[in-house]
Length: 275
Image: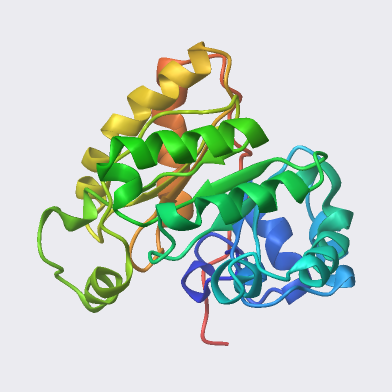
């Protein structure tokens, strides 16, 4: 998620070769969601170019391919996993976590399959699991079951907080599209590891988005004071202002915890012209 057309000429230069776009994004923010790997395992050379464009302290949360998580649901996936791990190896320490996003139909009855999968994965990586089945949030037994599996693997539970987004009906085409696609799960703000990961979805309206993340500003402050190292991804329905909002969130947290390192200071971007 670093090549959005709406960012070109605003947050990053335009035109900009594909092989330079992650470098430009890394001048704005220090972490990114690796969503493209969900659709297909990338070529190792492509991943090597991501590593070349970023410093070793840059965080990429790399999503496992849907063939593993959605289509095969961890059954007979050894070859796919080997190919994926080989492809992302050039990232080195930039691979902050391997992101196991599960479909909404993946419920408590399949947790054993997740447990077996995590046990077989190499311990050199960290793992972060995002679930969407309502039982994991509403049924205390299912919550404990999943937490136990994740704790045994040293894995994190990734919350995707959409509560602010669903507070009122959609008011734009982008919001209507997200309304139909995004999960409606209760907010969860429990960290299982020292590196929690949060995904937050706001609204098109900036101030609504900011009001909705106040809960997370407090939670992240607490995690930092506990010695944890959280990663927070700020989304809106169209993501047009996402880098700016991410920086604003970081500034709000840093005002509470001054020892937090500032984000990079980006170079000015020349405005788009017709010629």
